[in-house]
Amino acid sequence: MDWILDLWLAELQPRLEQLWSSLDFWRALALALFTILAALAAFRETLLRRLTRRGLAPRDRELFGRLLQVLPADGSIAFIGGADFGNAFDRRRLDDLNHFYQSWDNPEHRFLDQALEEKRMQLFVAVAQFLDTVRLHATPDPASVQSVVTVNADRDADLQERIREDVRQLNGAAKAVVTIHQEIVRLGRMQIP
Image 1 (cartoon, rainbow, N blue to C red):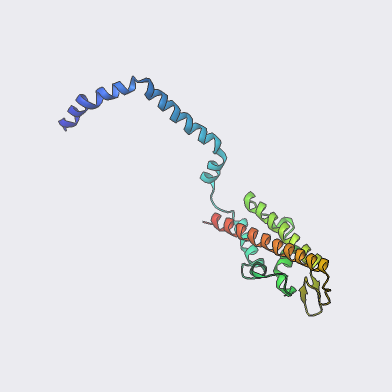
Image 2: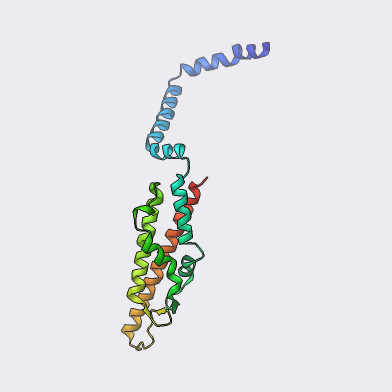
């Protein structure tokens, strides 16, 4: 044990005295502390949210579960994610989206968690836009089949270009719904411990 005391008195104490009296040491220490304080101030809200987050409230967990039942990844979402709307499609494959649109725009279906609620609203708007695009550009027939390309379509060049644009709009709206659905599922799963 004496060797530690000898090491302290002979080697470390003189170097620490020299370090404490150095102006460069105090500048570096002040700069490091200022950098830490600036980082804490800049990311204060994010850090507080992460430190105080306890997961979703029980009500939000239950609502998130119902959302996954209404819009499962293997239902209408999977269909529109893989569909090319230049082809005819069965409009019954959009039933999940129609049910979500008709029943999830009310106070009972609001998340308490702000981030989830923002995503739910984005999803609702994307579903509404997609369904409006389907109603506007797809023509139904009595057998529940819808198509952008009508059966009696002329070979007029303007009509063909308009059909291609309609298909692009439908495919783009479908992709937006699928992307936002994936984001809300990812966000909800991250917040459930």
